[in-house]
Amino acid sequence: MESNSNQLAINNGLFIGGISIILGILVYYVSPDLMGATSFGIIMMLLSLALYIFFTIDLRKKVGGFWSFREALKGIFLMSFIAGLVSIVVNFVFYKFIEPGAYEKISEIVTQNLSTTYEKLGMDQATIDKTIPEVLEKMKAQFDPSFTDVLKNLGIAVLIQFVMSLIFAAIFKKEQPIFTSTEE
Image (cartoon, rainbow, N blue to C red):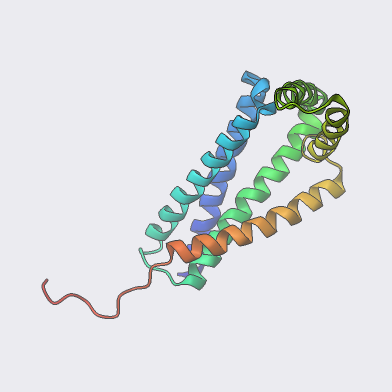
């Protein structure tokens, strides 16, 4: 039973990773301007959260509808770890070998969008000139990562996934009732 639940969690993780990869690559080719927009980042985060909720409920149904906190934590963490690992590996391959110029392309878009946004917020030019390179340096770890960046991203992802899994396990655990209804 346990290996079956592990396999179900792995499958759901592969689905989540696949969906996020397809969306990311599709947006990169269809409308790369979106990748530099804060609203797009928020929408992707909410979409990702919805995917995790859907697949967590799906996983609980597939394992019989009931699971303890420990079982839920294990299944949800395995699912999110696989999704994150697939996403990190495919993004590394995609941005390093298939689209090696992606960082330059996206950094130009982000620079334009941030400059416009910061000017609308009333920031002075010196602060804008200082802030944008900091943002671009953090972004470089995603779109033009070194091997160290990949390991660092994986470590951060595992930590975030574990915290998310703890929260989801607390929300979605469902203990099997001790007594059954006699009205049946």
